[in-house]
Length: 88
Image (tube, rainbow, N blue to C red):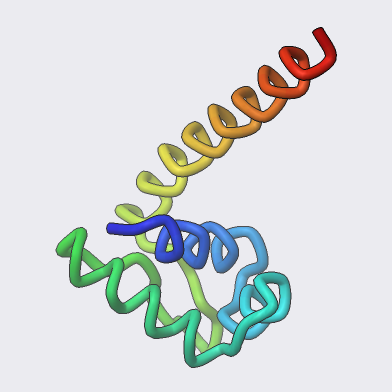
């Protein structure tokens, strides 16, 4: 599992589609799809299902996303901490 895979997963969860995630991430849809497939192989479960042409998170994907969001909150806290240190 690497940061690019997690970023791609988060982008898909937030945008609701591979194409929108690619646009938001300034990359291609095939690259997002590849990163998601790699992450699914690594974690050992499906993150999304296609239902009536829509991409929906699985229960496992939704559960993982909750942890991803907590991690990103932690990263934002680190950024604020660094800014506070820089300001003195």
